[in-house]
Image: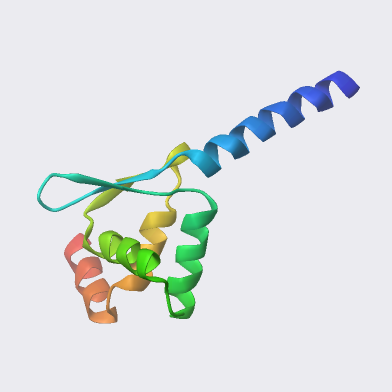
Amino acid sequence: MKTLNKQMRRRLDALETEFVTEPAILMMPDGSTATIPGGDYLLRLLGIAVHEESASPDQAAHLDLIRRSTGSREPGGAHIVDLIGIFLHEPAERENESVQAD
């Protein structure tokens, strides 16, 4: 049992390390890509977007990239960038997008 716990712990540690170090890739409207830090940094950006907090210049630039992006790829298939984007768009924009999706 101890061996199994050690193996699980090592696997979890490896996944956490990968999550923290891998960047998120944003797809931009012109077909280019942009890279922003992943992991905890994305969670901080989500907090800023949700609570409409003030952001540092770097964070503001990354939030602007997310706002302008058309899609993203994140470590482990996460969707944190999508959540951030929801909070960055005006309510009317979100309403129009949901109507178009129907």
